[in-house]
Image 1 (cartoon, rainbow, N blue to C red):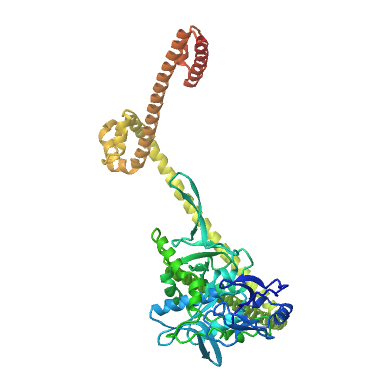
Image 2 (cartoon, one colour):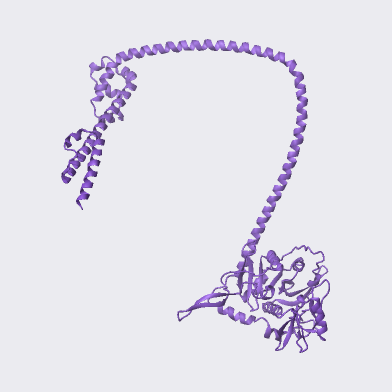
Length: 592
């Protein structure tokens, strides 16, 4: 359904309404009319002012204005239905360009192809076919398309296993200057040493932020929500892909698409079923499915409006030359890989959402199950409470009968317990007497042995003291038995008449304890002697240092330095610190 038309400007044409603007078409002034913005008053003005019909910008043939009650206002050709560019030059140019691209790739292509499925008749902008339909392309230049229409068209094709690709004409859809430019200002350094900003096309090698400066159309957001990316083209003939930066939110990025990749990009479109419930009960998208004012003839015949498209349409050839020149200096990003990544990202997001939904459903079921279990528990608790009351009544009846039996049983148990306690006490007393007699006997034997062996141990101790620490250490860790060593080296007078076996049996443990005691004592004495010697050396050095500082600075805090050699190391260190401080103070004064 064409949106724009024109009427010639006559000398008698006066008081032009605000929505009817002056434009130029084929070197003549015309009044451009937008069907979506005509009010009732302006419509009355048109009927009164004009004695003839409006004209088509594309084929220059007569048109009429249609304003049905439940359908969009639009223009309709009076005598011609095969106008390729009925909607607008931009819309027609894009359709023509896509038509030719698929045809060059060997596909069977039809423009405004009639399609009927389940009693629904549709006319798609471009139908791409092989043995059967494989792709329906809808070129959208107006943001005012109803969401129900988008959903109806896409879902109807999906029922027939045909994916629907939506191509948005940026400048027509958003309005010129209402979105981030498809060009960027780049700082350029010139040969003469100066620099400046030049406007250049967006790069092919990376993504660029895409920002809409006005309110984002609902149709754009709906398509982005369903497809996750949108193919777009501008009035200069360059193709783009716009997608969300993240799964959710309204932050977008735009990619350049090489013209040679446009067909492959559109063929990447998946079959999508859209669901939309309109709040408007009277909304009827069916009339929008029949955009049949742009029907095209069979593919082997010439296209209507071809000359007009070549002269005034979108310059795709110029855009292609610019593209090839730009690709000489940069490498284009693989847009098909970006689309695959977008789809995988969406699949992962959907999988996550399904998992979350499943988890939420499990939580809901668990809560319901918990509620049912809680109710069952309460019912069971009530039932048990009733049963418990009944049992309590029975128990009260039985308690009186059992009280006498329990008293008798407790008395009998107490008697038995006292008998066992008396028997245990007798056993304990017997055990203590036996233990006491055994300890007395052992003590007596120990005393006798001590009287007999103490002189010998004293002699052995003197023997150990006659050894050095190193000798004792070797003796302590020698593989030769200590008892054997001591027995052989003691004289017979010391041993008396004690045989070796008795000596070993009674003294082996005492010998080791005595050896450890002597070893620790002698080792400690040697450590103390070494420490005293080291301290004396330190005191001597400190005293010599004190004496030297006093002589050099000619002052005497201590005159009898030898007396300090017998004092403790701590006292000498304090004295040295004091003399050194005084010495440093005197030497610093002499510098001045």
